[in-house]
Image 1 (cartoon, rainbow, N blue to C red):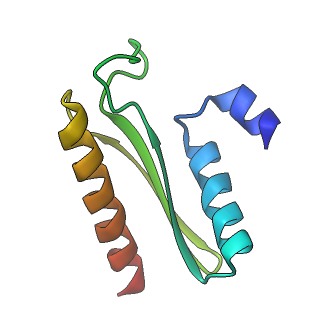
Image 2 (image 1 turned 135 degrees about the horizontal axis):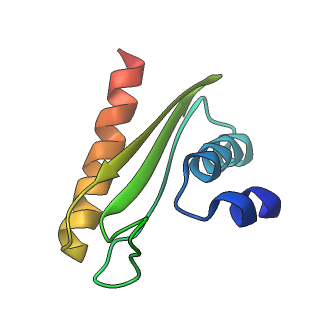
Length: 94
């Protein structure tokens, strides 16, 4: 876990996929959602600006990982990320 975090950074596809697997294992669920991002107002970089969010949804052995750019306003980024995570999971369940 620590090596993936060190190699790719917290806001990355490998990290959210590992998080989604871990939470499903710990909670003994078929499906899970993991998110990691930079909500703002600070903390962004040129490579990963504020509003950069990775969301991974997992059902059984299938993963859907997507990169989103949600904007620069912290509260909106948090709300959008929660909504997008749920919509992404619903899409997997259909």
